[in-house]
Image (cartoon, rainbow, N blue to C red):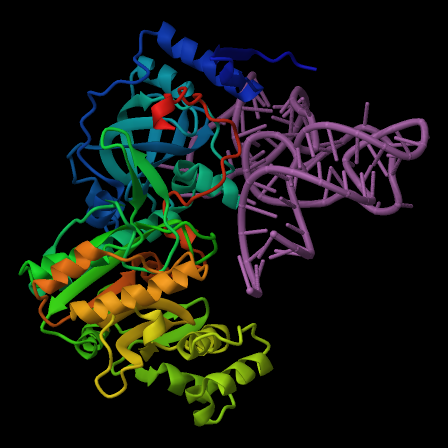
Length: 524
RNA sequence: GGGACGUUAGCUCAGCUGGUAGAGCAGCGGACUUUUAAUCCGUUGGUCGCGGGUUCGAUUCCCGCACGUCCCA
């Protein structure tokens, strides 16, 4: 049994650090002592890096060694040491920077004795700097011939195994830095995510939309049917809610005359976690005055095709083995039509509350006898129909009961001018012509209040301030929300929302490093 | 909330009907001047997630808990 060093310190009786040292870590600390003893800074910050792996590869990757001998320029590269292959006096090391990897050749005869002694103390995982000429090895690998090597930051923990890498999903999410170091595909996903969001901004700017930011902390969490997170502002002495949607604020801006606005930001919903749900998620909402939900269907097709063409060159891609075709026009179908298309039901059944109850019970769904017809339709749709909507489909004409902020359809006021976009059986976007009649809006809020009293925690709250805004007249407007995480999932072929969110929500598995300070009574 | 599966060395994984654990990589020592999962020789490393129970004896069987993944609600 090997004795272990255990360092431990406490604060308010909590263990704030407790580190059992493995042999591996002791080993590294001995190396660190050696480097320090040689008078070398372990964490210098004066290195100036001129080049990246990708840039050197682009410039010289296609050239033969013969041509490279003509190149006398000195290049420099910094990054993480990912592999060391020793051959006596010569070594090959693999250096990984943000753009990829490049190999460096370290030869005892080509660098100073001090540098070579330092190199012998380096470990896989350290951040290093090399500079020298570029050449190609016998096997044709582009390589920097090091004339100088520096340590820029010393790593104490060993990296995961070089061949299998890091696969344990829990560690990948909890220690995303390790995931990013070890799995180049992960880095690729987040580069792509950033690119998609930039494309959306380009697309919106092109159409004269203004990007804005509205409150994340709201006195009332409105704009969607969801349970909010609650917090408290000490100085104001008031409860606040993390927003579940920016909708009502964005429409205030449209009323204010901004006419075309969008926001890409986080929403927070206090609900379950799944491969398609994270409690904080990114949503784009946009509002366009003098447009209708039908205009937004066209706009949505254009946006998705614009993104796909930029990413793939064509408006087609594969998601989890399914070929998705974004070619315009996408199917447009009402909620009722969708139910009829996928289930064996006579059209009249969906227009009659009691028949609809019977029908949904035949499908094995739990439905209250007195449930409103519109809600029954949505239960049937969500449980039995939406999973079938694989190719992009706009589902339109949602019941007024489940659409408290949408404009009624002129011909059939029990339904609203609203659509949801489904791809691969998942809701990707939700849009409608906005309800801008303050009287109707008040009625809808009252209807929601009754739902709330009946026990529906997700029913919308009365918002007099918002109604007052509408009373100043909001132009006829259409608005839409697009789930950015789900969009990125589609375009990066990711099976889980956690694969497109850098730090997905997980339960803490260890006590907090620092104990919470005792709360003052008035802040409780 | 329910179900299934998982948790063994730093990482990736074995471990049979119960007898206190193995491999590969990493590490450490050695050889090696063009390798790229380098190779060769030698070698260290484990609270088997945590807590109970059954048993002479539990990584293994049973119960509970924690964390995770997937499916369902």
